[in-house]
Image 1 (cartoon, chains in turn red, cyan):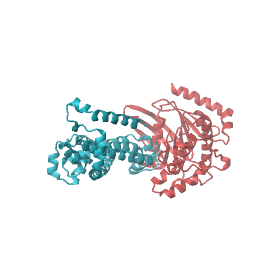
Image 2 (cartoon, rainbow over the protein chains, first blue to last red):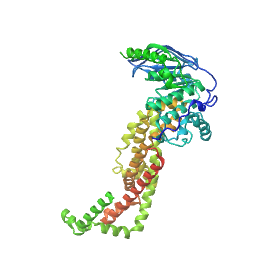
Image 3 (cartoon, chains in turn yellow, orange):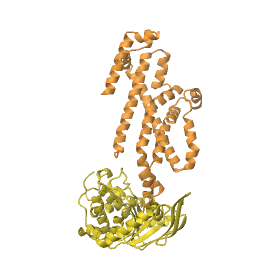
Image 4 (spheres, chains in turn brown, green):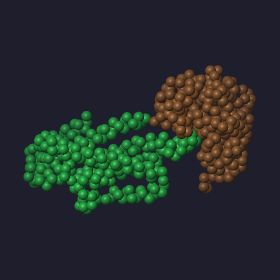
Length: 278
Length: 246
């Protein structure tokens, strides 16, 4: 894998307003989960869950591994149907409405190895019937804002982990959906790249707000990126604690995560997580 | 290098054993029934125009038969992948089709279909489509379900998921199915010619066997093997150019 090229930082004007593809039609959509229960046959995955994410809000979900977080994201994205209760994205309740309003970024980048970076990023446009040349042009304009300029033609195997993750994120954004469901997007990265990517995502969301549900097992990541964090229990899942972050998406990540308020909340979240894992 | 050396050693041993009459003595045969590699090479050269003519007939049958086998094999795999009902209905039939003893029912096939190229293509396609279908279907079914989910959230239709994800992902397995098909196409072509033919290497082998022209039998087998190896080589080249991500 190659070394990461210089990361774009907010000062360089990452994703200046209007650069990221706008969500078509509806401008801002919130997520509302009421009385949600989900089971695979006999296996209860989600016991009962109520969560609200306001439009352009960022909600973090942390919990012990195997606690049904990924299932919850798939429910939000319309890939699964609730056993009971409602998942509503701006009033859209059935699976197809949720699929239309939510872009889902899976845990692994899942870049298709037979496509170049730019064709991977442009998948949503191609699926929508945009011709190849036009789709490449549209995706290409965003490549430099993602620190990917010059790598348009590279195959997935030629990109570093951080770059792959950014291509995957660009692919998700280009779908132009108002809600983003992110499943441990940075879990596979090394600590330094992960910190850079967090700062980068924070900048992206400040410049171009979206409604986001972020699943992570990293409490610090959740508290840095999100407005609020819900700590979930082991399966069957319910909410153990809800916390608000002291200074979401601060410009300087290192400063933000070492601030006394942040450390206090992080300890509180860790305590809740320990309880949840019991 | 190693395969070439191995072939050299085997051919040398055969030459010595055959030219001294050791094999014929051991098997209690007339030496004419045990040609040496040198005699086979001589026969290859003497009969070059006859062999070339018959080889062309057989090659054409193999290529056309394989063409149908690939078309039908891929179509069957996609149909069985897209529809559970089709798979449950047809998979046993497709397996059963491989138990048809083509050679044994050859006389009936001649009565039914005559001597033209048509029935030969049917026989070759029938024998060759099976590994293509089975391998391609296995490839289509082993595609990462997460990748398909990802495509659904990017507004992909079923056809787009098939074309952009499942088809490329299963290409390596489809290629290995086609490679097996190519390897057995020569045997299938010989079977097909035994069903009833007036030309082709299989036809020549049949006649020469009856007339104890053993050197020419082996010469024809050699040509058949060379054609198959050339086809497999071409296929490997094509695969390397198409499946660049492996």
